[in-house]
Amino acid sequence: MATGKAARSVYYEALEGHRRQALVLIALLLGSGLLEGLALTAIVPLLDASSKEASSGGVTEWLTRMGIAKSSIPTFALSAFVVLGLLSALLRFVGEGRAIYLRNAIEESMRRRMTARLLQMKWSSFLSLRLGDINQSVMLEGGNTGTGVYAFVHAIALTATALVFLLLAFLLSVNLTLLTLCFAVVGVVGYRVAARRAEERTQEQARTASAIGEQISDLFGNLKFVRSTGSAQGSKSLASEAYKSYARASYLSQLYGAVMRVGFEASGVLFVGAIIGVVLLTEGELTARALVFLAIFYRLSPRLLTIQSDLHQARALRPWFVNWRERMQVAAEHQEAKKGSVDPTFEHEIRLEQVTFSFPESDRTILQDVDLTLRKGECVAIVGESGSGKTTMLDLVTGLLKPSSGSIRIDGSSMDELLVENWQRQIGLVMQDSPLFHASILTNLTMGDFESDEGRAWDVLRRANASNFVEKLPGGLETVIGERGARLSGGERQRIALARALYRDPWLLILDEATSALDGASEATIQAALQKLKGRVSILMVAHRLKTVDIADRILVLSDGKVVEQGSWTELLTQDTLFKQMAARQGLMSVA
Image (cartoon, rainbow, N blue to C red; front, top):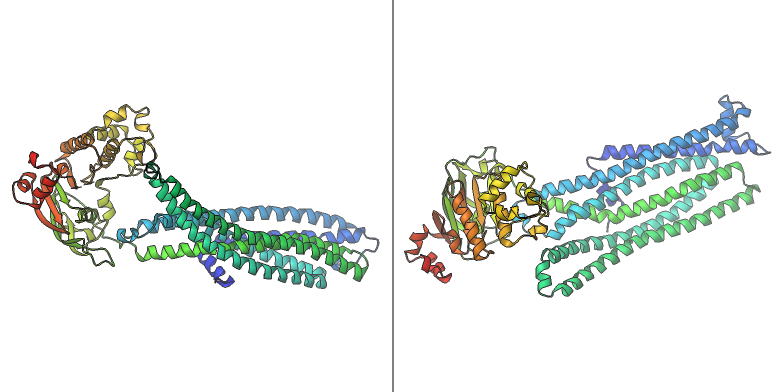
């Protein structure tokens, strides 16, 4: 169970990099409270001056000692009240503005830091994360922590202000101030009970939010399948149950805060009544000091309520930061090691030497003692049954994965010696389900990494056999293609993906099952484009449908993570090979 001390420690940590801003905020709100308290205190001589039994003690006597004539005290006090009140309002406005800025700065910082950590995770470790958890850590946890820090710092500032008010109240009346402190103790007890219950509900809320994120991703990311198979109702029911759990936890978390506020307000009414009763019984009338004390209490009371509300919110939102911190620690523990400093070149060859790979904490060997040489301008294909390690080889070549043993060299330089990101920027990648974005064709081609050039865009579209259909679209290059390119056919999407790969003028073009989901005509179109590219760019391709690789200069056959055969299309089909058996199963012997 989290304690108040734990909550303070958590938010102090969350304020890293923003602590100076927090101190400025506290100083501004404290200054505002001090000026307001002094403005209210200035009312005492005004009331004394208007009373038939004017008091000569307290503030009035202090002003007299300062050399201010009694006849001038009302004017001076009124001026002080107005000036100090206006300055207090100004400082409060600036302070509240800084508080809002602080909250948003923390949200932005946490989202940016989490995104950076996730982007730098080892790929093998990143694969173990759930998309719902990622969405939650970037959006919900960052946002709620920002709100929690805002509430925590705001509560500190208002607490300092409340202490100033209590000091002024103490100077006016010791007895009435002691009664006020008793009232505050009751409020603290109520806060602790409500905050503990709210934090429990928020922990439940955070857990449910992660599950909701995952369900939303699954539901709408696979909506075509869900709707086409009549599964929408079942998916909706599962999501509805998660929504209900989240709503219930959220309701209870906020309800405790509402109960606390109502209880505080009711107690405040009873307290004011008690104060008036005590003054009337002891002094027979409401004196100037009693009236000003009540004015101070009425200005203090909403601050006390806000302090309790802020602390309640800060404690209730604490689990969001705890979750965020844990995810940051996990991401930090699995960061990709910093690579070398050599800028890559590709003038000669890429060579894999005795490469073995298995995922961490797994006994299964994906690749074992693999050798591969890809010369500049060459087209090499990798084939094999599902699970033979084809895509893993591509991930090793791109630097996404690191060999468990063996080495990968580009023009003689080990991958560990290279600036891997610079190498990756020279790679054009087309996958089986290449990602397209809800943006224009031109934006999809540049991916935000390269400057938009319409002439270059049309050139790569022609080379990818995609210019004909793009020209017929209403907006041409500016046509928005929908989420995941939903407004295009499968063949059109893949041709856009190929054009995007070519836009960066890559040294190496990688095709990972790029045509496996296409019909014969679309596949032929892609193959025709690739045939024109041969020799102009090095190509490394993976395919399950063997007809796709007949353009390759050399074909490697993988089986159980080992290269068991290699040769040209003709060589492999004219010998008794595993490749020949695979081709026969796919009905390709007639084209041998």
